[in-house]
Amino acid sequence: MTDRQSVLVIDDEKINLQIIGDILRDEVSVMLAKSGEQGIRKAIDYRPDLILLDVVMPDMDGFETMNRLRHDARTSFIPVIFITALDDSSHEEKALLMGASDYIQKPLHTNIVQARVRLHLQLVKQRNMLEKLANIDPLTSLANRRKYQEVIEQEWQRAITDNTSLSLLVIDIDNFKQYNDCYGHATGDKVLQQVATVLASHLIDNRLVARYGGEEFVVLLSGCSQEESERVARRCMEDVEELNLIYTHEDFSGKVTVSVGGCTMFPGPNCRTEDFFNAADEMLGLAKRSGKNKILWKLPSNPHTITE
Ligand SMILES: Nc1nc2c(ncn2[C@@H]2O[C@H](COP(=O)(O)OP(=O)(O)OP(=O)(O)O)[C@@H](O)[C@H]2O)c(=O)[nH]1
Image (cartoon, rainbow, N blue to C red; front, side, top):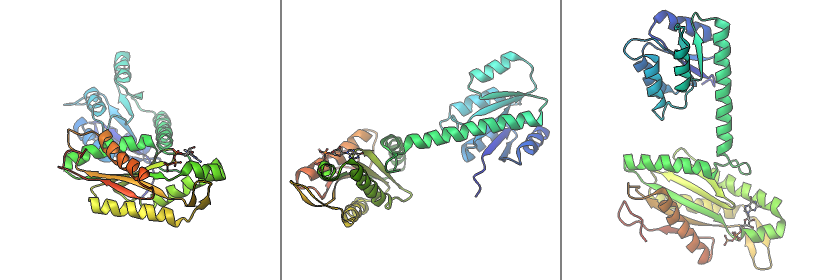
């Protein structure tokens, strides 16, 4: 696998596809489509980094193709450069107003096409990097709360469509204030990092581990049974204890431990992601009030509601 960026070229003229393909092929992976319809399909299937789109095409012209790309969440973020022989500023204005990133006039000049494509691919790289930074907690390198919110919404919809379950663990370090009081914030930060590493070791394809805030973490499991999710919760709890982070405080002496609140449910249209989080969080609160270093699980009622 290469990490080459990819460009989709949509043009009804075979010769144009060939020329643009030849201009770009040394620097990027090139995909070709000979109609708007085919281009939209390829954009959805392969998510190119950039699209070069011819304006004048039979059946569906570039503007209509652009319109459809912009209205599909799977393709709306892909930058589009229009390519056209039309020498009319109103077309250029229309394309830019529709959200085109750039506009290239035919006849094509190799250096200009390469330079503009390079520029927009560089912008894509920077955008991707910013997006990554915006989703990562800098202290622990786990996903942050913002990313959790994004993923839970997606997984929630997916679970409704596929009629599968979701489980959520809300995990909180016990007596962390006392730990900070004993050893200071900098050492407390190291504990957060160690706990994050332990939790991240349980990260596989259908899971998200995130730092929700402060000393609280979440693990979201898609399509896992309650039993399996409880097993993951137990492993997380035991692994933190096995870090053997012993400390002594006037109110407490022992190891760093965590408490876990859990909930498994089949999402339905009548419940919200906040209810799901609150159910697990409520269990965490109970676990804290009933001695800490334990897991409590919200019991399911019927598949579409959360038991009160
Ligand atoms: N070192 C460090 N401490 C943090 C960070 N975020 C939150 N905390 C600390 O976490 C502690 C949370 O305190 P509390 O909410 O009282 O919770 P607790 O002491 O863990 O008590 P219980 O949750 O009831 O077990 C506070 O001392 C916060 O300063 C952080 O990024 N780094």
